[in-house]
Structure formats: structure tokens, C-alpha cells
Image 1 (cartoon, one colour):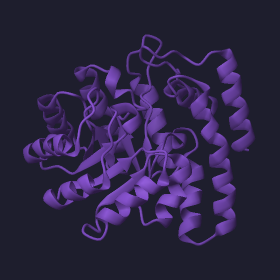
Image 2 (cartoon, one colour):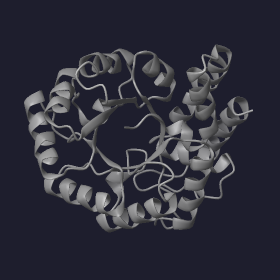
Image 3 (tube, one colour):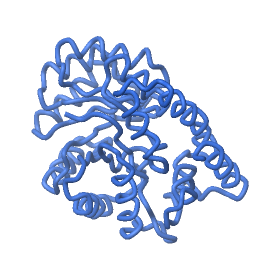
Image 4 (tube, helix red, strand yellow):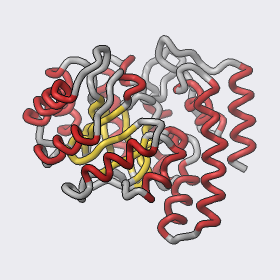
Length: 296
């Protein structure tokens, strides 16, 4: 259903930390023109956790209207309150979303049975395509390959997973567990540098942050891989390896990605929601140096 490079969009804000709709439009156009295969809004990098429901609704409507069906739009509807997740998922679908991405509940560590009940309850209430979101570093627990396989078999409209685990073997394990029984199940890595390893293992692509400011790099890499152009693959992979350092320049990394978007030439304010802060002068200089080195 989905494949290639899906950009988890940063949410563009103004100086008052309110959504900047004009800036959002500029970024959407930049990404589509850069050749991405889809957009994910209100993911982790989209600061879903720091936004009010009414903000989210206005943002979803705006992005879907601007995209106008040119690429698929996925909406992160996860949270900790199941009824609200279901309600927001239904809203997003009514607004035109192609799928919803739902992170597993955070705060308590949960076992497979608890996680199965959580997703089964949601999937029983909505019929739109659902992407699972596995991010153990943030949730404290892992969606195991066996759990994902069980959900994929029990619910046809659970159509894929974003596996944000810094270990390609984990994603490979999901591919090997699920693809033989659900060939259409989409398996994405959440780490930019694992895009090619994911494809080589039989996965479907990447949902990674660097494409926010350098989408054309991933378009070139994906085409080169499909054409078996290994020299271009190696060149692009080397750039991605270097640009992975951008993530380490701020805490949270959202600030660094937004500053990189601005430094790449887009007219935006790199503001972030609390408790984050705009990249300071030293951080900005480090990000700028990385972009000048690896975007040349």
C-alpha cells in the first residue's frame, strides 16, 4: 500500500509557537517537489505530544488540503487515551487522511497481551488503514515480531509498521515474521541510515527525518537502488551517514531538524513546542557545517 520515502514532517510554528500555516504550505510543496512518496504529520518529530486537539485538527485539514491527493498523507493519532485516539483517527480519515499511525501507549511497560488488547480495541472501532508505530526508546516496550504478525493476521486494515529501533535485525525479524503471511504489509524503518538495509531485507522503505531538509537525496537513492546503480547508492549512503550527526546537535532532536530545514533555504521560523528550544548559535553553526559538507 505504501512504499519508498515518507517524510515525517516537522510542524512549522511561528514566533508564538502557534502553527504557521503559510510556512507549512511552503514545506509541503518543497517535500513534494523533492520527490517524497508520502507525508506523515503529527509523528514524534511533528511534536504530536505537545499539541492541543483543536490545533491538530486545523493542521490536519490544512495539510491534506494543500497536498490535494498528490501523495499519501498519514496522520499520527497516537496518545494514551483510547477513546481520544479513536475519535481523532475518525476525524483524520474524514478529513482525507490515507492512514493513521498509532504509537503504542507510553508510560507503563506493557507485555504482548496488553499491547494486543490496545491495538485490537482501536482496530475494532475504526476501519481506515492503521500503521503501527514501534518506538521502544520512547514507550519503554517493544512491539515484537510475533505480536505484529498476530495483529496483521487478525486485522486486514492494520497495514504496516514504522519500526524505530536502532537495530536493523529487529526490523528484519518483523519482515521475516510477517511478509510470508501478509505480503502486502508495509514495513518501514525509522532510521534514515537503514533505508537501504530495510529494502535489501524485503522491507518497504523509510519514514525518516533527514528528508525534511534533503528530500531529493532520498529520491535519488531510491531510484539508484531500484536501478542497481551501486555507485550512486554508495554516494548517497555516505551523505546520509554524515547527516545522521544532525540528530545529535540538540535535545530534543526536533530543534536540529527544524533548524536544518531553515538552513536548507526554506522561509520558516525554527520554533519548537515546550520543553524544546530553538537551536542556539553554537548548535546552529554545527548544523550548518554538516549541511555544507554533506549537501554539496
